[in-house]
Length: 412
Image 1 (tube, rainbow, N blue to C red):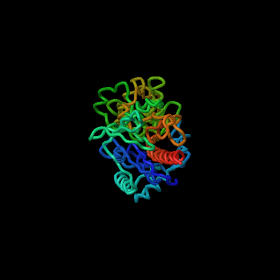
Image 2 (image 1 turned 180 degrees about the horizontal axis):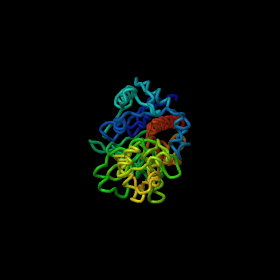
Image 3 (image 1 turned 45 degrees about the vertical axis):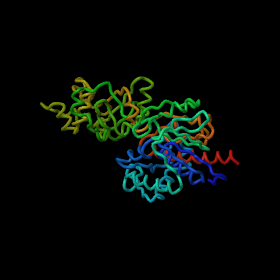
Image 4 (image 1 turned 60 degrees about the vertical axis):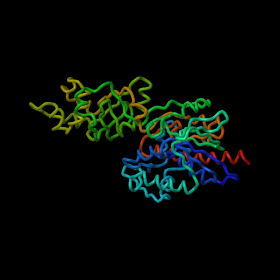
């Protein structure tokens, strides 16, 4: 991107990955950049997401990678082509942070931590001249079009030649992503798809007290999960006091949520023994058990015990336990009815936001020239596994490059 012929003052609002990336590109394009964030420090959700290991992107081939964005794959393909996963890895290496590919294809910094990456990045941004203003909560615009901020010293206004909004979605409000921007954009006539939980847990209409008391918080490892008629995946999830959560559940959260929205509930099928075919399970169960209880028979023949056995007992009746074939079918495809997602603020990410139809190819809001949007506030969703961060980084770059190009075209 060529440098502007004059100095442009550009405001970036939101200090997550999309906003920080936009600020870097804008400063590199010769603009004077001020970044504003409501929290006491930037990158808070980024840091917390990296506590268990900073999964930055994924190493799978580009087309399968893009397919993870489901209905919004065409729009995300264009953004990711501008900054594909390998380019993201190269960019991280440029910060002096090495990466490696894990056994699942997920890409991590070598030390697995987000903090060193963020520190190196902020140092480079400040060296590039980006000014960072924390505790500045964006309030919208004045009647004259100036940006309004609530600060510890009172309300402040400023005028920018262009603005990039990267305010996140609606999950983890305590870290700054509270969705407060929605009514401000709607007041401009910008449509916003309702923010909904994504990569989230789900509730059932009540577990038994026995399951809650003995097994809430227990993991179910090496199980399969899928929706009727669809593919099943192997992984693990956790029994909670209200339902289920965990990586295997998050992988299907969009499909589960959409089924609930359509019909009021969703049924998933749990395979308690995904490595054993149905015939083998049946053969084990029809073996004579003598005076043994069925619980002991399951444990001895199939090593089915603990939380797995408890869930089986919870979701089947006495008639299944009296019929080895029926019990085998339940073990291989145990129907679990889910009633609702957990609240949005508990979700890892959110679906909904500013639809791409309200933006031009540069991610500029059609209803307000000079205003650009990036990151999770756009209407897309993806599973965990590096896809969320990849799209945030890419959209921040595209919005920033769009802002520079738009300013040059309109200020010749």
